[in-house]
Amino acid sequence: MARLAATIANERQRIMQTIRAFLCERGYTEVETPILLKCPGMEPNLVPFETTVINEKKERFAGALATSPEYSMKKLLGQGMEKIFSITKVFRNEEEFGNTHNHEFTMMEWYTQGADHHAMMDETEGLIREVGKAFGKEWPAFQRLSVRQLFIQFVQLDLLSAGATELAVRCHELGVHTDPTDTESDLYYRLFLQFVEPNLPRDPVFVYDYPRYQASLSRLDATGRFGERVELYMDHLELSNGFTELTDALEQRRRFLEEAEERRRIGKTVFPIDEEFLRLLPSVATPTFGNAMGLDRLHMMMIGTKDIEDVLLFPGRKLFLGG
Image 1 (cartoon, rainbow, N blue to C red):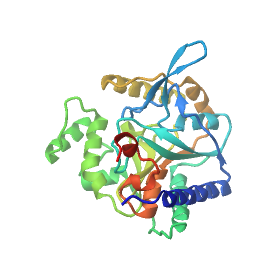
Image 2: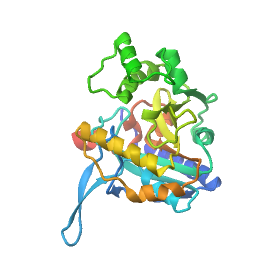
Image 3: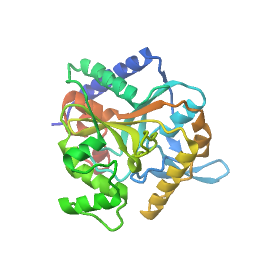
């Protein structure tokens, strides 16, 4: 049975008020970021909603809706802001209708200059516990497990030394389907989805230090093999994704070029590199952490539902398919 709109709205208001109070008490400034962008991101796994911007002269410019506010917020860090957060709508195409996905969803991102991903885990746990209080929810201590130790435990493979060949062999040994076009990242992800993710604890767990090819925009650790990236899982659902941020513009450009080539290889639109972002990146302190959290999924955790439509006033499935 559909939940009452007033109930959903009141719950969401409680979450937003708690988050804003928590962050503002810690010295954060809330910022607004653009939703319509020239470059929405380079991640090969994402499909932005593309559009055309037309000015008064009828000049046409390729654009897309934001998949996250990340680039915009890092530009603000590069301009001297130290502790910022944003609560905004973001958009990702080619997602399923319902279950844990919606093409339009609410994301919160927050950044602190001068602190790393370990401090981020501390603050994220504190934030979720504070929201939980507003719903009468409590959890045991949040576990922290590295990707390396999870692969050793569930895949019997040490990612410190294993490369694409070893990943492919292990896929074959475990009966995991592979494709000749699979990259090292693809092989890793197939094993992670089938053998690691389902075996994560139901209680909250931070999964941290991902292999370099899954590092996204995170700084590499001392070994150079792992990125200081963290994902929070609650009841097997990914809730947030954050990093100790990469601030080396040359390394970031190299990763952008790699991602652009991967997008080209798989037939996705290749967006222009955001040169302003790269210009400002070296002005960001090292370390700096950033974290992105799906607020619809946080809402799901607070009321104990598995269906994102239970926390949305206007789910995409109903908007486009009716019913």
